[in-house]
Length: 582
Ligand SMILES: Nc1nc2c(ncn2[C@@H]2O[C@H](COP(=O)(O)OP(=O)(O)OP(=O)(O)O)[C@@H](O)[C@H]2O)c(=O)[nH]1
Ligand SMILES: [Mg+2]
Image 1 (spheres, protein in one colour):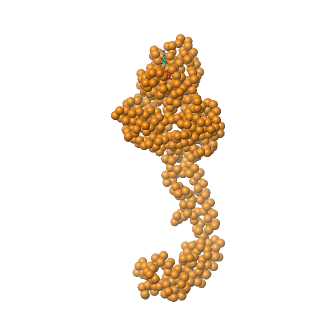
Image 2 (cartoon, helix red, strand yellow):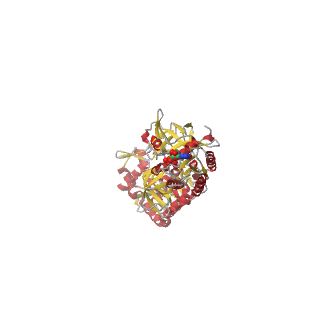
Protein backbone atom coordinates (compact mmCIF):
# COMPACT_ATOMS: atom_id res chain seq x y z
CA UNK A 1 0.00 0.00 0.00
CA UNK A 2 1.65 3.22 -1.16
CA UNK A 3 1.88 6.23 1.06
CA UNK A 4 -0.38 8.25 -1.26
CA UNK A 5 -3.26 5.85 -0.80
CA UNK A 6 -2.95 5.73 2.96
CA UNK A 7 -6.05 7.39 4.37
CA UNK A 8 -4.97 9.91 6.92
CA UNK A 9 -8.10 12.00 6.85
CA UNK A 10 -11.47 11.16 8.31
CA UNK A 11 -14.66 12.48 6.83
CA UNK A 12 -17.81 12.19 8.92
CA UNK A 13 -21.45 12.48 7.93
CA UNK A 14 -23.89 14.66 9.82
CA UNK A 15 -27.54 15.46 9.42
CA UNK A 16 -31.12 14.78 10.42
CA UNK A 17 -32.63 11.30 10.49
CA UNK A 18 -33.64 9.84 7.15
CA UNK A 19 -32.04 12.65 5.16
CA UNK A 20 -30.04 10.11 3.16
CA UNK A 21 -26.62 9.93 4.87
CA UNK A 22 -26.20 6.19 4.67
CA UNK A 23 -27.47 6.00 1.11
CA UNK A 24 -25.04 8.71 0.15
CA UNK A 25 -22.17 6.85 1.80
CA UNK A 26 -23.17 3.77 -0.18
CA UNK A 27 -23.38 5.84 -3.34
CA UNK A 28 -19.88 7.20 -2.76
CA UNK A 29 -18.15 4.06 -1.51
CA UNK A 30 -20.30 1.13 -2.61
CA UNK A 31 -20.54 -0.02 0.99
CA UNK A 32 -23.73 -0.29 3.05
CA UNK A 33 -22.70 0.80 6.53
CA UNK A 34 -26.03 -0.14 8.13
CA UNK A 35 -24.70 -3.56 9.11
CA UNK A 36 -26.76 -4.33 12.24
CA UNK A 37 -29.90 -6.48 11.70
CA UNK A 38 -31.93 -3.89 13.59
CA UNK A 39 -30.65 -1.14 11.30
CA UNK A 40 -31.62 -3.20 8.24
CA UNK A 41 -35.02 -3.92 9.69
CA UNK A 42 -35.89 -0.39 10.78
CA UNK A 43 -34.17 1.34 7.89
CA UNK A 44 -32.35 3.72 10.21
CA UNK A 45 -28.80 3.92 11.41
CA UNK A 46 -28.17 3.22 15.07
CA UNK A 47 -24.43 2.94 15.43
CA UNK A 48 -21.42 4.25 13.56
CA UNK A 49 -20.53 2.92 10.12
CA UNK A 50 -17.16 2.97 8.41
CA UNK A 51 -16.10 2.86 4.79
CA UNK A 52 -13.01 3.81 2.79
CA UNK A 53 -13.63 6.51 0.20
CA UNK A 54 -11.56 6.72 -2.97
CA UNK A 55 -11.23 10.26 -4.25
CA UNK A 56 -10.86 11.09 -7.96
CA UNK A 57 -7.14 11.83 -7.50
CA UNK A 58 -6.59 8.26 -6.28
CA UNK A 59 -6.32 9.22 -2.64
CA UNK A 60 -8.21 7.13 -0.14
CA UNK A 61 -9.73 8.68 2.95
CA UNK A 62 -11.97 7.28 5.70
CA UNK A 63 -15.68 7.93 5.90
CA UNK A 64 -17.62 7.59 9.13
CA UNK A 65 -21.40 7.41 8.87
CA UNK A 66 -23.35 8.56 11.91
CA UNK A 67 -26.98 8.03 12.92
CA UNK A 68 -29.35 10.99 12.71
CA UNK A 69 -31.91 9.84 15.27
CA UNK A 70 -31.84 12.07 18.34
CA UNK A 71 -31.78 9.02 20.62
CA UNK A 72 -28.44 7.95 19.16
CA UNK A 73 -26.79 11.30 19.29
CA UNK A 74 -24.20 9.94 21.71
CA UNK A 75 -23.03 7.65 18.92
CA UNK A 76 -22.91 10.58 16.55
CA UNK A 77 -20.68 12.51 18.95
CA UNK A 78 -18.43 9.49 19.46
CA UNK A 79 -18.00 9.26 15.69
CA UNK A 80 -17.56 12.97 15.13
CA UNK A 81 -14.81 13.46 17.74
CA UNK A 82 -12.24 11.77 15.53
CA UNK A 83 -13.08 13.36 12.19
CA UNK A 84 -11.29 16.06 10.23
CA UNK A 85 -13.98 17.13 7.75
CA UNK A 86 -17.76 16.94 7.72
CA UNK A 87 -20.22 15.86 5.07
CA UNK A 88 -23.47 17.48 6.13
CA UNK A 89 -26.50 15.95 4.48
CA UNK A 90 -29.76 17.89 4.01
CA UNK A 91 -32.89 16.44 2.41
CA UNK A 92 -33.84 18.62 -0.59
CA UNK A 93 -37.52 18.32 0.25
CA UNK A 94 -37.34 18.79 4.02
CA UNK A 95 -34.54 21.28 4.46
CA UNK A 96 -32.68 21.68 7.74
CA UNK A 97 -34.34 20.02 10.72
CA UNK A 98 -33.59 19.66 14.43
CA UNK A 99 -30.60 17.30 14.22
CA UNK A 100 -29.20 19.17 11.23
CA UNK A 101 -28.79 22.10 13.60
CA UNK A 102 -27.69 20.02 16.55
CA UNK A 103 -25.11 18.10 14.52
CA UNK A 104 -23.78 21.38 13.15
CA UNK A 105 -23.50 22.74 16.68
CA UNK A 106 -21.67 19.60 17.79
CA UNK A 107 -19.24 19.87 14.88
CA UNK A 108 -18.54 23.46 15.78
CA UNK A 109 -18.01 22.57 19.45
CA UNK A 110 -15.58 19.88 18.37
CA UNK A 111 -13.66 22.40 16.30
CA UNK A 112 -14.52 20.70 13.00
CA UNK A 113 -15.09 23.72 10.84
CA UNK A 114 -14.51 22.52 7.33
CA UNK A 115 -16.49 20.25 5.05
CA UNK A 116 -19.05 19.95 2.30
CA UNK A 117 -22.87 20.10 2.32
CA UNK A 118 -24.79 17.62 0.19
CA UNK A 119 -28.42 18.40 -0.64
CA UNK A 120 -29.76 14.89 -1.10
CA UNK A 121 -32.71 13.20 -2.73
CA UNK A 122 -32.54 15.80 -5.52
CA UNK A 123 -34.50 13.34 -7.67
CA UNK A 124 -37.58 13.65 -5.46
CA UNK A 125 -38.34 17.34 -5.98
CA UNK A 126 -38.52 19.78 -8.92
CA UNK A 127 -35.34 21.57 -9.95
CA UNK A 128 -36.58 24.86 -8.47
CA UNK A 129 -36.97 23.29 -5.04
CA UNK A 130 -33.45 21.89 -5.27
CA UNK A 131 -32.18 25.39 -6.07
CA UNK A 132 -33.97 26.76 -3.05
CA UNK A 133 -32.60 23.99 -0.81
CA UNK A 134 -29.07 24.68 -2.08
CA UNK A 135 -29.47 28.40 -1.27
CA UNK A 136 -30.73 27.58 2.21
CA UNK A 137 -27.81 25.25 2.77
CA UNK A 138 -25.38 28.00 1.76
CA UNK A 139 -26.92 30.25 4.38
CA UNK A 140 -26.86 27.50 6.96
CA UNK A 141 -23.15 26.75 6.53
CA UNK A 142 -21.47 29.84 5.14
CA UNK A 143 -18.25 29.12 3.32
CA UNK A 144 -18.86 25.44 2.69
CA UNK A 145 -19.40 24.19 -0.87
CA UNK A 146 -22.94 22.87 -1.44
CA UNK A 147 -23.64 20.11 -3.95
CA UNK A 148 -27.04 18.72 -4.96
CA UNK A 149 -27.03 14.93 -5.33
CA UNK A 150 -29.21 11.90 -5.69
CA UNK A 151 -28.02 8.64 -4.22
CA UNK A 152 -30.77 6.94 -6.19
CA UNK A 153 -29.79 8.13 -9.67
CA UNK A 154 -26.14 8.94 -8.97
CA UNK A 155 -26.63 12.51 -10.18
CA UNK A 156 -24.13 14.96 -8.67
CA UNK A 157 -21.97 12.28 -7.04
CA UNK A 158 -18.96 13.14 -9.22
CA UNK A 159 -19.31 16.81 -8.33
CA UNK A 160 -19.53 15.82 -4.67
CA UNK A 161 -16.40 13.68 -4.93
CA UNK A 162 -14.58 16.60 -6.55
CA UNK A 163 -15.75 18.97 -3.80
CA UNK A 164 -14.61 16.49 -1.14
CA UNK A 165 -11.23 16.11 -2.83
CA UNK A 166 -10.83 19.90 -2.90
CA UNK A 167 -11.77 20.14 0.78
CA UNK A 168 -9.31 17.37 1.66
CA UNK A 169 -6.61 19.11 -0.37
CA UNK A 170 -7.03 22.48 1.23
CA UNK A 171 -7.26 20.91 4.62
CA UNK A 172 -4.19 20.85 6.70
CA UNK A 173 -4.76 19.82 10.23
CA UNK A 174 -1.96 20.45 12.58
CA UNK A 175 -1.85 16.87 13.76
CA UNK A 176 -0.29 16.97 17.13
CA UNK A 177 3.04 15.28 17.65
CA UNK A 178 1.78 14.07 21.00
CA UNK A 179 2.37 10.42 21.89
CA UNK A 180 0.10 7.68 20.58
CA UNK A 181 -3.56 8.02 21.50
CA UNK A 182 -6.50 6.22 19.95
CA UNK A 183 -10.09 6.29 21.19
CA UNK A 184 -11.81 2.94 20.85
CA UNK A 185 -15.12 3.03 19.02
CA UNK A 186 -15.70 -0.69 18.39
CA UNK A 187 -14.56 -3.94 19.94
CA UNK A 188 -15.35 -7.31 18.41
CA UNK A 189 -14.04 -10.84 18.13
CA UNK A 190 -12.84 -12.35 14.88
CA UNK A 191 -12.65 -16.09 14.55
CA UNK A 192 -9.03 -17.20 14.56
CA UNK A 193 -7.78 -13.71 15.38
CA UNK A 194 -9.35 -12.84 18.70
CA UNK A 195 -10.21 -9.44 20.04
CA UNK A 196 -10.04 -6.51 17.66
CA UNK A 197 -10.44 -2.87 18.67
CA UNK A 198 -11.01 -0.09 16.17
CA UNK A 199 -10.80 3.66 16.39
CA UNK A 200 -9.40 6.80 14.86
CA UNK A 201 -5.75 7.40 15.68
CA UNK A 202 -5.61 10.90 17.17
CA UNK A 203 -1.87 11.18 17.41
CA UNK A 204 1.30 9.15 17.17
CA UNK A 205 1.50 5.89 15.27
CA UNK A 206 0.88 2.20 15.96
CA UNK A 207 2.73 -0.80 14.55
CA UNK A 208 2.96 -4.55 15.09
CA UNK A 209 4.37 -5.45 18.47
CA UNK A 210 3.82 -2.05 20.07
CA UNK A 211 3.27 -2.14 23.82
CA UNK A 212 0.37 0.12 24.67
CA UNK A 213 -2.00 0.69 27.56
CA UNK A 214 -5.77 0.81 27.72
CA UNK A 215 -6.79 3.73 29.92
CA UNK A 216 -8.40 4.51 32.26
CA UNK A 217 -8.42 0.76 32.95
CA UNK A 218 -4.63 0.60 33.13
CA UNK A 219 -4.57 -2.60 31.06
CA UNK A 220 -1.29 -3.27 29.25
CA UNK A 221 -1.67 -4.70 25.75
CA UNK A 222 0.62 -5.81 22.94
CA UNK A 223 -0.49 -5.15 19.40
CA UNK A 224 -0.23 -8.21 17.16
CA UNK A 225 -1.25 -6.60 13.91
CA UNK A 226 -2.57 -3.36 12.52
CA UNK A 227 -5.04 -2.83 9.72
CA UNK A 228 -6.34 0.27 8.01
CA UNK A 229 -9.60 -0.43 6.19
CA UNK A 230 -9.03 -4.18 6.07
CA UNK A 231 -5.49 -3.86 4.76
CA UNK A 232 -2.49 -4.75 6.88
CA UNK A 233 -0.02 -1.95 7.42
CA UNK A 234 3.32 -1.85 9.17
CA UNK A 235 2.48 1.35 10.99
CA UNK A 236 -0.75 3.27 11.10
CA UNK A 237 -0.40 7.02 11.49
CA UNK A 238 -2.45 9.81 13.03
CA UNK A 239 -5.70 10.51 11.22
CA UNK A 240 -6.23 6.94 10.08
CA UNK A 241 -8.99 4.54 11.02
CA UNK A 242 -7.22 1.68 12.64
CA UNK A 243 -8.09 -1.89 13.61
CA UNK A 244 -5.79 -3.48 16.19
CA UNK A 245 -5.64 -7.16 16.96
CA UNK A 246 -4.95 -7.58 20.66
CA UNK A 247 -3.96 -11.12 21.65
CA UNK A 248 -4.66 -12.23 25.19
CA UNK A 249 -7.34 -9.60 25.67
CA UNK A 250 -10.96 -10.54 26.18
CA UNK A 251 -13.59 -8.71 24.23
CA UNK A 252 -15.06 -7.55 27.52
CA UNK A 253 -11.71 -6.16 28.70
CA UNK A 254 -12.22 -2.95 26.77
CA UNK A 255 -15.03 -0.94 25.22
CA UNK A 256 -15.97 2.21 23.35
CA UNK A 257 -14.73 5.20 25.30
CA UNK A 258 -11.41 3.62 26.31
CA UNK A 259 -8.22 5.21 25.09
CA UNK A 260 -5.28 3.15 23.86
CA UNK A 261 -2.15 5.14 24.57
CA UNK A 262 1.60 5.04 24.89
CA UNK A 263 2.01 3.84 28.51
CA UNK A 264 2.30 6.69 30.98
CA UNK A 265 2.33 9.35 28.30
CA UNK A 266 -0.89 11.08 29.35
CA UNK A 267 -2.51 12.16 32.57
CA UNK A 268 -5.52 10.08 33.57
CA UNK A 269 -7.70 12.60 35.26
CA UNK A 270 -11.04 13.06 37.02
CA UNK A 271 -10.99 16.80 36.42
CA UNK A 272 -10.66 18.98 33.36
CA UNK A 273 -10.41 22.74 33.30
CA UNK A 274 -12.01 23.99 30.10
CA UNK A 275 -12.69 27.15 28.19
CA UNK A 276 -16.46 27.04 27.76
CA UNK A 277 -18.26 27.41 24.46
CA UNK A 278 -21.94 27.59 25.33
CA UNK A 279 -25.09 27.34 23.28
CA UNK A 280 -26.95 28.49 26.36
CA UNK A 281 -25.65 29.46 29.78
CA UNK A 282 -24.70 26.34 31.71
CA UNK A 283 -25.38 26.94 35.42
CA UNK A 284 -22.77 26.32 38.09
CA UNK A 285 -23.20 22.82 39.49
CA UNK A 286 -25.06 21.51 36.43
CA UNK A 287 -24.96 17.73 36.08
CA UNK A 288 -24.44 16.86 32.44
CA UNK A 289 -22.93 14.27 30.13
CA UNK A 290 -19.46 15.08 28.88
CA UNK A 291 -18.34 13.58 25.59
CA UNK A 292 -14.60 13.33 25.22
CA UNK A 293 -13.01 11.12 22.61
CA UNK A 294 -15.46 8.26 22.23
CA UNK A 295 -16.31 8.35 25.93
CA UNK A 296 -19.45 9.68 27.51
CA UNK A 297 -19.07 10.53 31.18
CA UNK A 298 -21.38 11.96 33.80
CA UNK A 299 -19.94 15.24 34.97
CA UNK A 300 -20.59 18.16 37.26
CA UNK A 301 -19.80 21.58 35.90
CA UNK A 302 -18.10 23.86 38.39
CA UNK A 303 -17.85 27.34 36.96
CA UNK A 304 -14.71 29.43 37.27
CA UNK A 305 -15.53 32.96 36.26
CA UNK A 306 -17.53 33.82 33.16
CA UNK A 307 -15.73 31.72 30.58
CA UNK A 308 -14.06 28.82 32.35
CA UNK A 309 -15.28 25.74 34.16
CA UNK A 310 -13.95 22.69 35.88
CA UNK A 311 -15.56 19.44 34.79
CA UNK A 312 -15.67 16.94 37.64
CA UNK A 313 -15.99 13.56 36.00
CA UNK A 314 -17.51 10.34 37.32
CA UNK A 315 -14.80 8.30 35.57
CA UNK A 316 -11.38 9.55 34.53
CA UNK A 317 -10.34 10.52 31.03
CA UNK A 318 -7.11 10.60 29.09
CA UNK A 319 -6.99 14.19 27.93
CA UNK A 320 -4.54 16.72 26.60
CA UNK A 321 -4.67 20.48 26.35
CA UNK A 322 -6.67 21.50 23.28
CA UNK A 323 -9.01 18.48 23.32
CA UNK A 324 -12.66 19.28 22.74
CA UNK A 325 -15.47 18.23 25.04
CA UNK A 326 -19.18 18.31 24.22
CA UNK A 327 -21.64 18.89 27.06
CA UNK A 328 -25.15 17.49 26.77
CA UNK A 329 -28.19 17.31 28.96
CA UNK A 330 -31.51 16.66 27.30
CA UNK A 331 -29.88 18.26 24.30
CA UNK A 332 -26.51 19.68 23.36
CA UNK A 333 -25.80 22.65 25.64
CA UNK A 334 -22.28 23.54 24.76
CA UNK A 335 -18.76 22.34 25.00
CA UNK A 336 -15.30 23.25 25.98
CA UNK A 337 -11.70 23.21 24.97
CA UNK A 338 -9.43 21.57 27.53
CA UNK A 339 -6.98 24.04 29.00
CA UNK A 340 -5.63 21.99 31.88
CA UNK A 341 -6.09 18.21 31.67
CA UNK A 342 -5.00 17.66 35.27
CA UNK A 343 -5.94 20.75 37.24
CA UNK A 344 -5.92 21.20 40.98
CA UNK A 345 -9.33 21.11 42.66
CA UNK A 346 -9.24 24.87 43.11
CA UNK A 347 -8.34 26.32 39.76
CA UNK A 348 -6.28 29.43 39.25
CA UNK A 349 -7.93 31.76 36.70
CA UNK A 350 -4.61 33.43 35.87
CA UNK A 351 -3.11 30.07 35.00
CA UNK A 352 -6.11 29.32 32.79
CA UNK A 353 -5.53 32.61 30.98
CA UNK A 354 -1.94 31.57 30.38
CA UNK A 355 -3.13 28.24 29.04
CA UNK A 356 -5.64 29.95 26.80
CA UNK A 357 -3.43 32.64 25.32
CA UNK A 358 0.09 31.82 26.35
CA UNK A 359 2.99 30.91 24.13
CA UNK A 360 4.55 27.49 24.81
CA UNK A 361 7.34 29.20 26.71
CA UNK A 362 4.88 30.80 29.11
CA UNK A 363 2.98 27.55 29.52
CA UNK A 364 6.13 25.63 30.36
CA UNK A 365 7.24 28.32 32.76
CA UNK A 366 3.84 28.31 34.42
CA UNK A 367 3.95 24.56 34.78
CA UNK A 368 7.50 24.49 36.11
CA UNK A 369 6.85 25.75 39.61
CA UNK A 370 9.58 23.31 40.54
CA UNK A 371 12.07 21.46 38.37
CA UNK A 372 10.72 18.56 36.34
CA UNK A 373 12.00 16.03 33.86
CA UNK A 374 11.18 16.23 30.19
CA UNK A 375 8.81 13.29 30.50
CA UNK A 376 7.07 14.93 33.50
CA UNK A 377 6.43 17.96 31.32
CA UNK A 378 5.14 15.91 28.42
CA UNK A 379 2.99 13.76 30.69
CA UNK A 380 1.24 16.87 31.93
CA UNK A 381 -0.72 16.89 28.65
CA UNK A 382 -0.13 20.63 28.40
CA UNK A 383 2.42 20.70 25.63
CA UNK A 384 3.17 19.23 22.30
CA UNK A 385 6.74 17.82 22.25
CA UNK A 386 7.57 20.22 19.41
CA UNK A 387 6.63 23.13 21.63
CA UNK A 388 8.75 21.81 24.47
CA UNK A 389 11.79 21.51 22.23
CA UNK A 390 11.33 25.05 21.02
CA UNK A 391 10.75 26.47 24.48
CA UNK A 392 13.43 24.43 26.30
CA UNK A 393 16.03 26.89 25.06
CA UNK A 394 14.82 29.40 27.63
CA UNK A 395 15.05 26.94 30.53
CA UNK A 396 17.90 25.86 32.74
CA UNK A 397 18.74 22.20 33.04
CA UNK A 398 20.66 20.17 35.58
CA UNK A 399 20.70 16.47 36.33
CA UNK A 400 17.97 15.76 33.76
CA UNK A 401 15.61 18.31 35.28
CA UNK A 402 14.33 21.48 33.70
CA UNK A 403 13.71 24.62 35.72
CA UNK A 404 12.79 28.17 34.90
CA UNK A 405 15.44 30.89 35.17
CA UNK A 406 13.06 32.55 37.66
CA UNK A 407 13.04 29.49 39.92
CA UNK A 408 16.82 29.28 39.78
CA UNK A 409 17.14 32.99 40.51
CA UNK A 410 14.86 32.61 43.48
CA UNK A 411 16.81 29.65 44.87
CA UNK A 412 20.03 31.53 44.29
CA UNK A 413 18.87 34.61 46.16
CA UNK A 414 17.38 32.47 48.95
CA UNK A 415 20.69 30.64 49.26
CA UNK A 416 22.71 33.83 49.31
CA UNK A 417 20.40 35.40 51.83
CA UNK A 418 20.64 32.36 54.07
CA UNK A 419 24.43 32.26 53.78
CA UNK A 420 24.78 35.98 54.41
CA UNK A 421 22.62 35.68 57.49
CA UNK A 422 24.63 32.67 58.62
CA UNK A 423 27.90 34.57 58.16
CA UNK A 424 26.63 37.41 60.32
CA UNK A 425 25.20 35.15 62.97
CA UNK A 426 28.13 32.74 63.14
CA UNK A 427 31.20 34.16 61.43
CA UNK A 428 33.10 31.24 63.02
CA UNK A 429 31.11 28.80 60.87
CA UNK A 430 29.60 30.65 57.88
CA UNK A 431 28.74 27.48 55.90
CA UNK A 432 25.34 25.83 55.45
CA UNK A 433 24.72 22.19 54.53
CA UNK A 434 24.21 21.97 50.75
CA UNK A 435 21.08 19.92 51.33
CA UNK A 436 19.47 22.88 53.08
CA UNK A 437 19.58 25.04 49.96
CA UNK A 438 17.59 22.90 47.50
CA UNK A 439 14.95 20.19 47.53
CA UNK A 440 16.68 16.77 47.44
CA UNK A 441 15.35 16.01 43.95
CA UNK A 442 16.84 19.20 42.55
CA UNK A 443 20.22 18.86 44.28
CA UNK A 444 22.02 19.00 40.91
CA UNK A 445 21.18 22.69 40.62
CA UNK A 446 23.63 23.43 43.48
CA UNK A 447 26.36 24.05 40.93
CA UNK A 448 24.26 26.86 39.43
CA UNK A 449 23.66 28.72 42.69
CA UNK A 450 26.92 30.64 42.65
CA UNK A 451 28.15 29.34 45.99
CA UNK A 452 31.45 27.77 47.06
CA UNK A 453 31.29 24.18 48.21
CA UNK A 454 33.56 22.45 50.70
CA UNK A 455 32.91 19.14 52.47
CA UNK A 456 29.17 19.07 51.81
CA UNK A 457 28.74 22.67 52.92
CA UNK A 458 28.03 25.74 50.86
CA UNK A 459 29.66 29.15 51.48
CA UNK A 460 29.35 32.58 50.03
CA UNK A 461 32.15 33.03 47.54
CA UNK A 462 35.31 33.90 49.48
CA UNK A 463 33.72 33.36 52.88
CA UNK A 464 36.12 31.97 55.49
CA UNK A 465 35.51 31.29 59.15
CA UNK A 466 36.39 34.43 61.09
CA UNK A 467 36.62 35.28 64.78
CA UNK A 468 34.88 38.62 64.35
CA UNK A 469 33.87 40.05 67.72
CA UNK A 470 35.00 36.90 69.51
CA UNK A 471 38.67 37.73 69.16
CA UNK A 472 38.78 38.78 72.81
CA UNK A 473 37.03 35.61 73.94
CA UNK A 474 39.49 33.53 71.94
CA UNK A 475 42.48 35.24 73.52
CA UNK A 476 41.05 34.74 76.97
CA UNK A 477 40.36 31.09 76.32
CA UNK A 478 43.84 30.49 74.96
CA UNK A 479 45.35 32.10 78.02
CA UNK A 480 43.28 29.80 80.23
CA UNK A 481 44.29 26.80 78.20
CA UNK A 482 47.95 27.74 78.38
CA UNK A 483 47.68 28.04 82.15
CA UNK A 484 45.80 24.75 82.54
CA UNK A 485 48.22 22.58 80.55
CA UNK A 486 47.15 18.95 80.24
CA UNK A 487 44.55 19.50 82.93
CA UNK A 488 42.52 21.40 80.29
CA UNK A 489 39.50 23.63 80.77
CA UNK A 490 35.81 23.48 80.06
CA UNK A 491 34.99 25.45 76.91
CA UNK A 492 31.53 27.00 77.17
CA UNK A 493 31.48 28.46 73.62
CA UNK A 494 31.32 25.29 71.55
CA UNK A 495 31.48 27.15 68.23
CA UNK A 496 34.61 28.96 69.30
CA UNK A 497 36.06 25.62 70.40
CA UNK A 498 35.41 24.11 66.97
CA UNK A 499 36.85 27.12 65.23
CA UNK A 500 40.07 27.06 67.29
CA UNK A 501 40.37 23.32 66.81
CA UNK A 502 40.03 23.77 63.00
CA UNK A 503 42.80 26.35 63.28
CA UNK A 504 44.99 23.82 65.14
CA UNK A 505 45.01 25.87 68.32
CA UNK A 506 43.32 23.46 70.68
CA UNK A 507 42.16 19.86 70.88
CA UNK A 508 38.64 19.17 72.03
CA UNK A 509 38.04 16.35 74.48
CA UNK A 510 34.77 14.83 75.64
CA UNK A 511 32.15 16.65 77.62
CA UNK A 512 33.05 20.14 76.34
CA UNK A 513 36.59 20.08 77.67
CA UNK A 514 39.67 21.01 75.72
CA UNK A 515 43.43 21.26 76.06
CA UNK A 516 45.85 23.54 74.27
CA UNK A 517 47.34 21.98 71.14
CA UNK A 518 50.87 21.90 72.61
CA UNK A 519 49.61 20.32 75.86
CA UNK A 520 48.02 17.57 73.76
CA UNK A 521 51.29 17.06 71.87
CA UNK A 522 53.31 16.81 75.11
CA UNK A 523 50.81 14.38 76.65
CA UNK A 524 51.09 12.26 73.56
CA UNK A 525 54.91 12.23 73.78
CA UNK A 526 54.71 11.16 77.41
CA UNK A 527 52.31 8.38 76.55
CA UNK A 528 54.35 7.15 73.60
CA UNK A 529 57.56 7.09 75.58
CA UNK A 530 55.94 5.12 78.39
CA UNK A 531 54.40 2.62 75.99
CA UNK A 532 57.70 2.12 74.22
CA UNK A 533 59.35 1.41 77.58
CA UNK A 534 56.62 -0.70 79.18
CA UNK A 535 54.55 -1.86 76.22
CA UNK A 536 51.40 -0.47 77.79
CA UNK A 537 49.96 2.21 80.00
CA UNK A 538 47.17 2.38 82.57
CA UNK A 539 44.98 5.34 83.38
CA UNK A 540 46.54 5.67 86.83
CA UNK A 541 50.07 5.64 85.43
CA UNK A 542 49.24 8.18 82.74
CA UNK A 543 47.61 10.45 85.30
CA UNK A 544 50.64 10.27 87.57
CA UNK A 545 53.08 10.91 84.74
CA UNK A 546 51.20 14.08 83.72
CA UNK A 547 50.35 15.09 87.26
CA UNK A 548 46.75 15.82 86.40
CA UNK A 549 43.48 14.59 87.81
CA UNK A 550 41.62 11.49 86.70
CA UNK A 551 38.95 13.16 84.54
CA UNK A 552 41.27 14.90 82.02
CA UNK A 553 43.57 11.88 81.92
CA UNK A 554 40.62 9.66 81.01
CA UNK A 555 39.43 12.12 78.34
CA UNK A 556 42.89 12.42 76.81
CA UNK A 557 43.20 8.63 76.57
CA UNK A 558 39.82 8.44 74.88
CA UNK A 559 40.87 11.08 72.40
CA UNK A 560 44.09 9.12 71.69
CA UNK A 561 41.91 6.10 71.00
CA UNK A 562 39.78 8.10 68.55
CA UNK A 563 42.83 9.59 66.91
CA UNK A 564 44.15 6.10 66.24
CA UNK A 565 47.15 6.38 68.54
CA UNK A 566 46.16 3.89 71.22
CA UNK A 567 43.97 0.86 71.51
CA UNK A 568 42.26 -0.24 74.64
CA UNK A 569 43.03 -3.73 75.93
CA UNK A 570 41.21 -4.45 79.19
CA UNK A 571 42.19 -1.74 81.66
CA UNK A 572 45.28 -0.81 79.71
CA UNK A 573 46.17 0.85 76.45
CA UNK A 574 48.77 -0.15 73.91
CA UNK A 575 50.12 1.78 70.97
CA UNK A 576 48.56 1.02 67.66
CA UNK A 577 50.99 -0.31 65.14
CA UNK A 578 50.46 2.70 62.90
CA UNK A 579 51.40 5.01 65.77
CA UNK A 580 54.69 3.23 66.49
CA UNK A 581 57.81 5.03 65.40
CA UNK A 582 59.32 3.34 62.40
N1 LIG B 1 -35.39 8.94 -3.96
C1 LIG B 1 -34.36 8.93 -3.11
N2 LIG B 1 -34.52 8.41 -1.90
C2 LIG B 1 -33.47 8.40 -1.05
C3 LIG B 1 -32.24 8.96 -1.43
N3 LIG B 1 -31.41 8.83 -0.40
C4 LIG B 1 -32.09 8.21 0.59
N4 LIG B 1 -33.34 7.94 0.19
C5 LIG B 1 -34.42 7.37 0.99
O1 LIG B 1 -34.31 7.81 2.31
C6 LIG B 1 -34.25 6.74 3.21
C7 LIG B 1 -33.32 7.05 4.33
O2 LIG B 1 -32.02 7.12 3.83
P1 LIG B 1 -30.79 6.83 4.73
O3 LIG B 1 -29.59 7.01 3.89
O4 LIG B 1 -30.94 5.56 5.42
O5 LIG B 1 -30.96 8.00 5.74
P2 LIG B 1 -29.99 8.37 6.92
O6 LIG B 1 -29.75 9.81 6.88
O7 LIG B 1 -28.81 7.49 6.89
O8 LIG B 1 -30.89 8.03 8.17
P3 LIG B 1 -30.37 7.76 9.69
O9 LIG B 1 -29.07 7.08 9.56
O10 LIG B 1 -31.37 6.95 10.34
O11 LIG B 1 -30.24 9.10 10.27
C8 LIG B 1 -33.82 5.58 2.38
O12 LIG B 1 -34.33 4.37 2.88
C9 LIG B 1 -34.35 5.88 1.04
O13 LIG B 1 -35.68 5.37 0.91
C10 LIG B 1 -32.12 9.54 -2.73
O14 LIG B 1 -31.10 10.07 -3.13
N5 LIG B 1 -33.22 9.50 -3.53
MG1 LIG C 1 -28.03 6.25 8.26
